[in-house]
Length: 387
Length: 149
Image 1 (spheres, rainbow over the protein chains, first blue to last red):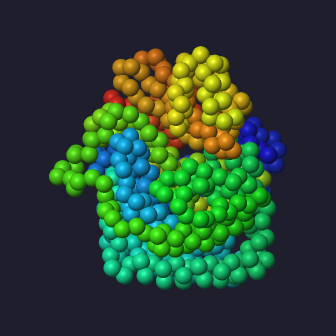
Image 2 (image 1 turned 135 degrees about the vertical axis):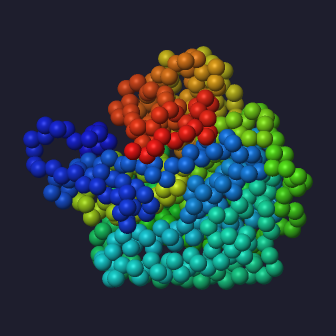
Image 3 (image 1 turned 90 degrees about the horizontal axis):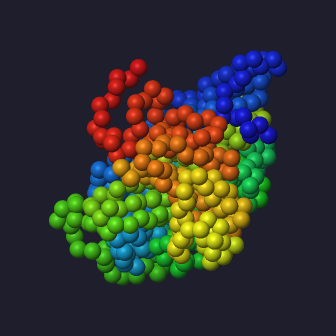
């Protein structure tokens, strides 16, 4: 609608209705991190958005040029800290592709299990915080948030039992995984996903029978198929806009081809479609974890001998772009190697960065109250936006 | 267009070697950069703009890299162009892909590459007063930070 002039500031000699510039953030509770949106309003309607990011920028790309292939994976966790497993996954896959490392089947399955658990944990945090953004409309606001956090804790408990950490893991390493599952873990994991599966039904009932929720989500923040691809949004946003694309199926990695699952898509492209896609992804993730636990092969979890020094992993000259389907879409790592123990250049393709870039295209024309609903439906994690 | 058709048509249109592989890498001269992106989008069907970045090859100049995908036919293209040593100007892809807007701003921020015709070329991650462009190889990782404000 107002596509062409949304990222620029407001013209000074404007002679139409009175306009007001308002800051949302960088410390706005609905911003899910440190994000500042300078919105220009005509009455209650947003006419322009200038998105200001970078508050959490640590220059991971420069940092990775100073750290070896053995050191960086655990630091990669810190890009998207809500789905730390995903970023580690992409980085080690890129290094493995250039170095032609085999990854043992057991390690591939373990990677799938943690990646899918991570997807559930990440979607739970998204659902809780998004519903809290929608606030009073949900009868108290924080109800769903507390439920989701309660369930997410169960998954963090699993991660804690696996690697000893609850948020940033260092589970992946080039050539395999660093940890194997302890005794009894698989059973606990099955129990946890069964609980989550039943709770997802409860959430859906609570939300989809609520007229206020539907009114705030349906028809709000519509992204067309064409715009979605042009800006390069990924994951649930892309699938919510009717594009049937999922890397786990379209470009399988780490044995995803061994599992049966469907790729949920919705046509409408609004907040409700994105919500629907994620709710179905909960169930698909649970299905994948069950199959992976059932079929988990025996064997080693790493294909290379243990390291005596962190600079011991050397990969030949070359480049590779490896990508995984994270909770927020395509997370990719583009590594250029010069044959030493550190990358010559490493580019992060952060899903949240590309997803957030959609905001200036879809927010104008909506009311201020819808801005938080749209922002939440994008599910940005600012560690990954700013890297 | 499938991968093999894409490879052949890119090779004949731009007169360059395109190695088969995933993704296919196409390298052109900077003056054909925007034309390449337009061809990738309109003819090869790569409507999905994945990312754009650069690589500093020190005295051999900067290289701009963009990745675009055709999601229907599963074709991925890695587009590359090498700027001459000392050159920091490059054609902008914003007329072709709207997603290039933020990516080129980030690239300008980190490498100092000026994208001609970009509608809003300013820093995106670092503050406007920042000195230097951190991902250049000449920028030391421990460059002293000027006092904040």
